[in-house]
Image 1 (tube, helix red, strand yellow):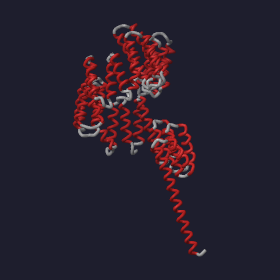
Image 2: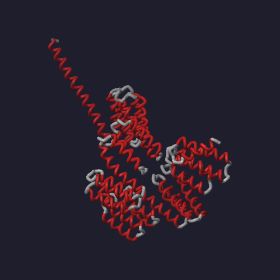
Image 3: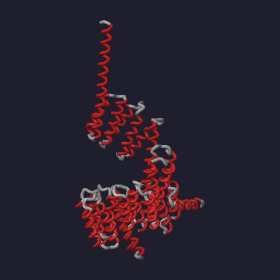
Image 4: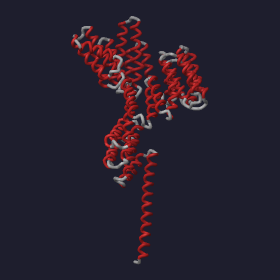
Amino acid sequence: MSKKSFWTVLILCAALLSQTADRCFADVGEQFQQAWDLYASKNYDQAQTTYQQLAQSYPESDLGLTAQKYLVIVHIKAGRLTEAQAAYDALNTGYSGNAKLPAALFLIANIYETSKEHDKAIVVCQDIIQNYPSSPSATDAGFYVARINARFVIQSGDNGSADAVVNGLLADFSSHPDMAKELFKLARNYMYSSRYGKVKGLYQEIIQRYPASPYAIKAQLGVGAMDVMSSIKAKDYSSAQAAVSSLVTSFSGNPGLAAALYEIAIKYEQSEQYASAKAVYQQIVQQTSTGLSVINAQLDIPKTDILSLILAENYTAATSATDSLITDFASHLKLARALYSIAQRYEDSGQYLKAKAEYERVTQQYSASDQAGRSQLDVRKCQVLKLFESGNDSGAFAGIDSLITDFAGSSYLAYAVSRKVAEKYYINAFRLGSQGSTSQAASMFQRALIVWLKVVNQVPASDETPYALSWAADCFQRTGDFTNSIAFYKRVANEYPTHKLAGRSLFSAGGNYADMKALGLLSNSEADAGTKTAYQRLVDTYPDYKGAKHARSWLARHNSN
């Protein structure tokens, strides 16, 4: 072969190889796009198959890492958590030396978070922190763990611990680019426990520390809104009204004003200040002509009129106004929610048959609404309350048992039985006691206890369980059963140590031992030993609880003897 022919063949081969490589890379790109399209369309089974093939075809490469990463994500999205864990382990093992692995793991943590698998997200973040501490993802993972911990502690109601955790988060990650956003979210978490002063404080931190953040503008509006909320909570309605006027004047034209006013109106409603709620709803409508808050406020204006009529016991006018509401807002998406509020108002007013009728209306005519499922349970609950009102306790207890059996899977069950039935007995007991009917009050506490024991023993554990345990302990104490009272208070502290009732439960247990000592039910040494154990744990574990000061004084006196 001539030299010229050799170089011609070589050039042709190179060109052919280049075209083959281009075709190969094009095929890979098409395969990944196909897998992504399947994933995006929620066709998780086929997406899984495609990503598995890609991971097997390109092992120990960046392409293989990408495929294996998305294989984990597909399993998470499909709810296959066991398979997700196996794929995650394979990703960690097969690509431990790949510099892109920490970022891949952090993406997986985010997917776990959006899927509400917070515990698993934290485990992934801890893997990143432990195994790749110098990677940029380690900082993000540390921030994630800290902020999720802060949210959980806030939601637990342990205010002292929550404040300490939030302060720690701010100290450790003050320069993190998402800090302003996270502080805003944490402030919203505090809103659920009505800690408006704390919410305002976090908004002020955002304004002072991150003035260029878009959340600073939102926080400025939030500071004014919290002044209103705090005044309503304190029942200082004149100050609340002045604060509303100031808010409207200061933030006229602000796109977030309508939503802030809507939350204020809801707070007024919750405080049974229906005229004030109506006035705020009207301001929303006057301030702007578009937006979800405006659409809902238009419905809520006549709804508050109905709530006022029920509160005033003008049931005939309330019925007529409800009929008009249904006619005028027949196509409104939140009509079922408004009718549910009306039913609740009837129930709170002791008009159980009228409440039952409204709940039935929601169940039958708005079966696709969010309120329909609860309304089915509420219908039965109103039947129980009517039996209780008539003095038919055996029928009421049987109705509760039936309710627990028939609605065993409902997340609303524990709350409905505990707060809406047991509390009725409990409140009635206090009413009788204030009238001097001691024996009748004790009998009513015993009835409340029976219902709370049903919540504890027959209903699956839920957020309501620690409250039921605590109230049962209180009823045991009020009916003279101090031993069981102490046992139930200890259950709260032992089984729910981060709950806001844990400190109170230890304080109450210590007090029960003192009562038993005073009544001669325990020897001085036995009673003091029990009080000491409860109080010592209280001051060690919950030093910020308001009763801890008394506990420390008691311990100081008795330890010096």
